[in-house]
Length: 159
Image 1: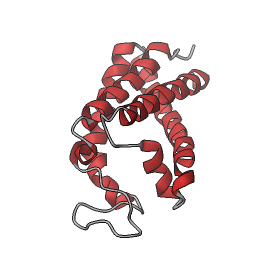
Image 2: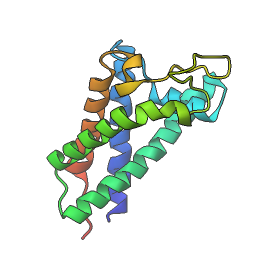
Image 3: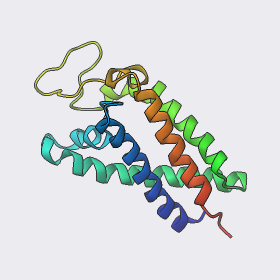
């Protein structure tokens, strides 16, 4: 595995992913902020949550870049369309499986069954993240596909 290539392109793909997601929030396409959501999981300080969440999100992006690189190496090729397919599959798993499970994992997120209280300040994303807006699933899927396109298009297989 070409760790240097995975690290470089994983970092840039994560920046693009985060820019698309945060940009969509700024444009009113979604109310979901992954850096904030991740950050509030590790600190109750809402003013620092975005920074901590962004830093953790970059680390997670690198970890996923290594996983994508393993797939590219096992297949013996890295192409933008293979990356796009992996990104689409990754996005679907996040939307269909992870979003509904998130309230059970996140210490400061309300569940679908119980409303918010002072210690659980975040709204649960719900199925497909629809509680954060009707366009959230589309934006999330597009961001994951773009992440995969960057990794697949620019990752260099190990020699």
